[in-house]
Image 1 (tube, rainbow, N blue to C red):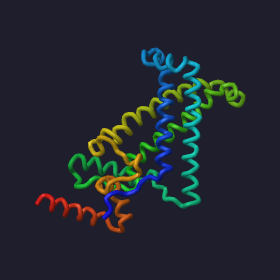
Image 2: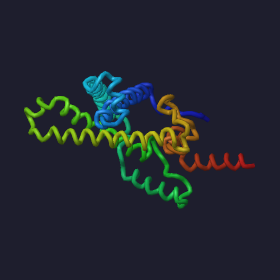
Image 3: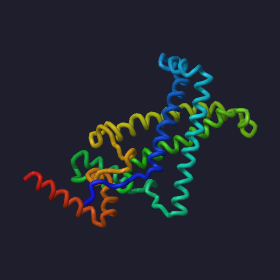
Image 4: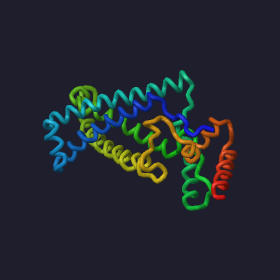
Length: 240
């Protein structure tokens, strides 16, 4: 019986590293401009070569981020349409039912947590929150970068609106990643000190049972009930 399972290919691992680097650069250069009165912001701006350099770095990081997001979307479309991938990131009614199920589980009213497939409902909600926020930041960032060009085709009110949307959405995405994603990937008791699956591409069988038991059942050609029964037998044998 396999002890680890491959979940992410090399391309996905590289993509994740690109997103880490570009998003970190955007956060550092963006928040230092928004909260310019803070001492740490002044330190960043000074050591980056001044406000003009910070703005230039922010725009170039935005270009790389935009290209990465566009490549991600095109890859997903190509995979779904041409290669007939399963739409495993689409939010369904069952995801909301699983959320309710897990609330009952944490309250002690269910024996097992909600059975997860390729991606859990929490991963889906987080993914779409970050993706839609990223797309909005790309659009508003382009408007703020080329305001004269944009106002040739649209009214001038689009510029201050884009500024508000860009700044606030960036803060929302930053909070989603820093609070939700980092907790789930690092500080959650189930993965502490770090979930290495996105860096190694693999996940242990124990974690697969806990988080993606339906996918594990599909891989092993068995059923959810059989996997749980086998685990219960192992636990009983261990107690003896």
